[in-house]
Amino acid sequence: MACCGQGRAALALDRANAAQVPAVRGPSVRIEFTQPAAVMIRGPATGRHYQFHPGAQSQWVDPRDAASLVRSGYFRLT
Image: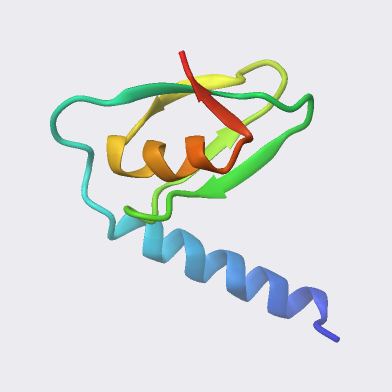
């Protein structure tokens, strides 16, 4: 069982890794999260973090991440 300190350490590690991901170059793809909940997801191809919630259900993402996210069934191209 993990304690809250381990969770904070994991979050700090994720933030450090996200900072190492290069900025998106070239075109992006707009996708929409189709569920009525909030979610933060890590792009499977780039490692970038994307946050979706009822107030912001669609956003621009790297096309390499978009392909996998749309295949999950929880996202659609807009």
